[in-house]
Amino acid sequence: MIATPSDEVEDLLANGDGDLLLDCRIRNLYYGSFRAVRDSHIPIHRGSVTAFIGPSGCGKSSALRCLNRMNDLVRGFRFDGHVHFRGKDIYHAHIDPVAVRRYIGMVFQQPNPFAMSIFNNVAFGLRLNRYRGDIGEKVEEALRGAALWEEVKDKLKNSGLSLSGGQQQRLCIARAIATEPEVLLMDEPCSALDPIATRRIEELISELTEKYTIAIVTHNLQQAKRVANNTAFMYVDTSEGGRTGYLVEFGETQELFDSPQEDATKRYIQGEFS
Ligand SMILES: Nc1ncnc2c1ncn2[C@@H]1O[C@H](COP(=O)(O)OP(=O)(O)OP(=O)(O)O)[C@@H](O)[C@H]1O
Image (cartoon, rainbow, N blue to C red):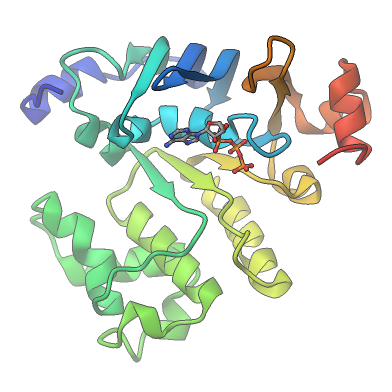
């Protein structure tokens, strides 16, 4: 990894035109000698929500984590392919993965607030980025953006860990959007939440699309239908004795669910396997 001055990163990630914000082409993705994903091309359009669905182990999270180089943190990870963000390859040798994550933020399966106050959780990234403006104002803006402000405005000094699971997840979303990324990656953000908290996050996802492009991994097909414009269906190839995930079908969510082109997609959305 080579760190570059931020102006060079800005230059490398300079605005590309068009609707295609992220173009992910995974030829092969390995963990050590294990080929976890192959032959998957997932285009992510500006202002859209893209869902990754498929059975357990088909590589949904691995593909998602490629989009902001989160897999770089995994020992043995190797990637053959490209991810173009605004037309520029984020795996370019001169791109600092930490800088990439400023543009492409992430929310995880388990809400993971830091053991610090609600305020400081949201201010964390701003301070890291040496934000020079009014941090209080930015924290409020992010908490409002994550639909959490009204619930926490009188207890900003309380620990983030004192909140309910759903509130913690919205706090993590506030933390992610405080630094104004362009893309939010969400890896099963509702899997640890009850149905009411889940609905709240789904509503929030729809609100967030006004400002952000979102990619979400979900096991919940109804959730994919409710929130996503486009859906990528991945499956596992066991033909050569391996367990390699690959993209079977990508398309507009409604079309993919109403008239799937591939038999595996049809069987999966009909609930024949999970
Ligand atoms: N850090 C890692 N090291 C080694 N193998 C990994 C690692 N992360 C994932 N894998 C393997 O890669 C394959 C794809 O895993 P991944 O988590 O991407 O799938 P998934 O579709 O998101 O699964 P699930 O729905 O169960 O979360 C699996 O066989 C998994 O065991």
